[in-house]
Structure formats: structure tokens, C-alpha cells
Amino acid sequence: GAGVSQSPSNKVTEKGKDVELRCDPISGHTALYWYRQSLGQGLEFLIYFQGNSAPDKSGLPSDRFSAERTGGSVSTLTIQRTQQEDSAVYLCATGMPNEKLFFGSGTQLSVL
Amino acid sequence: EDQVTQSPEALRLQEGESSSLNCSYTVSGLRGLFWYRQDPGKGPEFLFTLYSAGEEKEKERLKATLTKKESFLHITAPKPEDSATYLCAVREYGNKLVFGAGTILRVKS
Image (cartoon, rainbow over all chains, first blue to last red; front, side, top):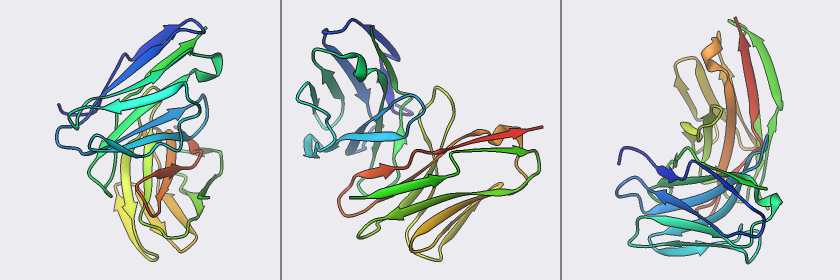
């Protein structure tokens, strides 16, 4: 596609439910990142993929958070047993290694 | 641990009033400093990458400069459409980009 695509754009869920967020990268981009942005805050690194491998997952806040990438393309970020503090915009970015990143528009997650 | 600090947190300018945004950083081995622009409800949009002290890059009314400890984003004669949040990020060894909290710029006509 022309850009990084994230879905859904908005997700409202109840506390305790699981959610899955999807990222479709720009074709050919091998590096894929997930970031979290809380209201009025900067971007918080969550996890980095190179191909299907995740050499840096140091930013995942807890074991309720997991991510996978298949076929070196689509990635899903899963949050289990959501909590209110998980409410934020989740941003995906892709690129070639050591080059600039292209961001999607994000998924706004609201946990009630 | 990497530290990226941006100042000011917010800046209000009149149209045509030039100013600068600051990004100070502490990394053990800089492998790139990045400037992004973010509009409300959208993901960050790439502006510049700087790699070594003394390097400068320009795009329209924006000019980015880099020293060993900080970067400046100079805005010359800004227009209302330059209003956005400007984010600075650094990459050291490895591939993680560490972002600052951003500067919210408002330009009034």
C-alpha cells in the first residue's frame, strides 16, 4: 500500500477484555515498531521487529502485552485483560533498517 | 539510558515571528537524530535526519541543526499551517528510536 495502515482506527473496550491491534506496513519495509502515545505525552517505545524476529521488546509494559509479525509483513499487538491505564493511541511505524520511519495514523484505544 | 529533552513544551508565535525549538540529548553513540511533525489525530510525519555535529538541513521555512549535545529546529517567518507538535528522536546503537515529549507550536495570524 501507499502508507502504513492501522486498524481499527478506534477501539472502545471494557476493562478485562482482550484487544488486537493490526498494522500493515509499507511493502518491502523490514523494520516495524510499535509505540504508545498517551494524551499530551511523547511516544513510548514498545517493541521492534526486524523481519519476523523481535530483537528488542524491552518496552512492553507487562506480560499482558504481546506482539507478533508474520511473513515479514503484518503485525498484531495484543493486550490481554485490558486496564484503564492501557488507554492511549497505539502507533505503528515501519522502515528499512537504520533509516527514517513512516508512521500510521494509530489506533485510539479507550478502556472503560 | 537515553535522554531526550525538548523545550519549550509549548510555543505561541505570531505569523512571521521566527523562533527556535530545542532538543537536547544524551546518548553513548548517536546514530541519527530525527525531527518529526505531528498533527492532531495523525501519526508523526518525517521532517529531517541529522547524523553528525555541524550538519544542517532545510525544508521550506524549517532548518534543523545539530551539535554534539543538542539540535535546533529553526522556524523562519512561520505561517498558521506550521502549527503542530514537533517531535525529536534519537537512535543510538541498536534500532530503537527514543522520542522526546515534543513542542506544541501555535502560530497565530
